[in-house]
Structure formats: structure tokens, C-alpha cells
Image (cartoon, rainbow, N blue to C red; front, side, top):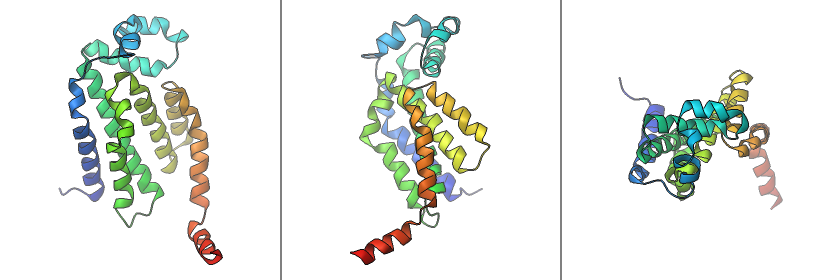
Amino acid sequence: EPLTPARRDVAIIAAVALAAYLPSLLGPFHFDDYNVIVNYSMVHAWSSFFEHASGGVRALLKASYVLNWTISPDAFGFHLLNIGLHAANAVLLYFIGKRLLPDNVRNYSLLPALLFALHPMQTEAVTYISGRSSSLMATFYLGAILAYLRGAHWGWSCLLFVLALATRETAVTLPAALLLIEICRRTDWRTIARRQGAHW
């Protein structure tokens, strides 16, 4: 069965994101990784995590560390998950673009997703294990936006919002982002552009 354009785009985006950060798989733990993972016994076992979860912040982020550590305490697995999250975020951004931008030109959603996948600004969130807070939060954040744009039950966006908040506090901006999206969707930009052109 031949690939549809959307599936082909997703494959390209994921492959580009994975290839760009493949060398980071060999990277070691460094800096804050020792404070929040290597020397932090709470994330070394699920029993310790649940015992202290009620008094902690960023519980979902810590749970992801526990998952990695209990599978293997080697840095390789942590980096692998970070790269996977980055690729997933680029794909989510692509589908958000397809909902927001005209669908008659494929590159309108493909190129921004590729730019996100390759932009140097993402390097810290992907290659620095402790930078996972940004990538994991973005996965739930972008997922909430996509659920909203697809007209899913409001409960899905709320659930993803809570998960994003449990990962990183900056997710609190999500309601403002959805409001801005709604304003942009209801604005007739062509009419505004014509009026501005006539003014000048």
C-alpha cells in the first residue's frame, strides 16, 4: 500500500529529528544529571518514587527518570527517550500546522516541523538529559493543542494540560496559547492585509 503524503511527511520529519541527534546517544551524564538522576535515590526505584511523590514537584518528569533507571541506569536509554520525545514533538507540530494552515500547499506544515526538528535551540532539551523537562512538557502541551484543534472532547485537552503541568510549570501558559489560536482562527487576515495595503 503506497504511503499517503501525510505519512510520508511524518516519516521524513521523524527520520530527520532522529538522525540529527543520533550522536547524542553516546553522551554521558553531566552537570545537573547527577543531582536529579544519578545521585538521587528517589528516581532509582518505583517504591522510592511513590513514597516521596506527594511532597515533590514535576512528578511526571521524575517518573520518566524512574522508568529509564529501572530499565537500565546507563545514559544511553535516557538519551534515546529524549530523542524520541523530540521526534514526537516535531510530528505533533506538523499535525498542528495542518490544522491551522492552508492544506493546499504541503510545505506550509512540513517546513515548520522540519525547522523545529533541526533548530539549534532544541539542542539542550534533547542532548542534555535534565533538559527533558522541556521536551516532555512540550509533548503534552502540543498534544493538548492538537486535541483542541481536532475537536476532541474537552476532557482530553484538560488531561494533557494537567500532565504537562506535572512535568514543567511553564505549561501554565497553555490556556493563553489556546485563546491566541482561537483569536487567530477567527481573524480575517486577508481583509486586514488588503486594508493595510490600501492605507499605505
